[in-house]
Image (cartoon, rainbow, N blue to C red; front, side):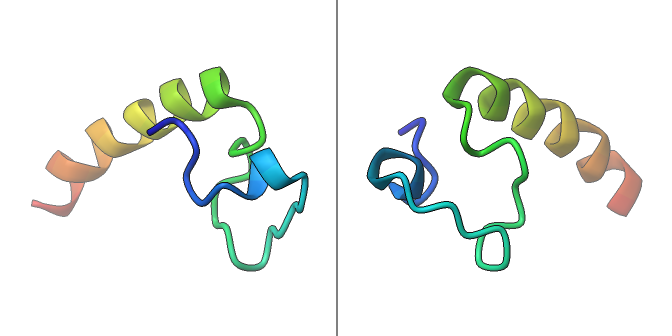
Length: 45
């Protein structure tokens, strides 16, 4: 669930395929994703 694509688990960092720079950190990506998703929803609408 925390792993976006399992790349972090494999140790294969692909910034080109993964638009998330903090995807390496499970805790950081969870917070970053939520923080970025919250303002993104109302901003789009």
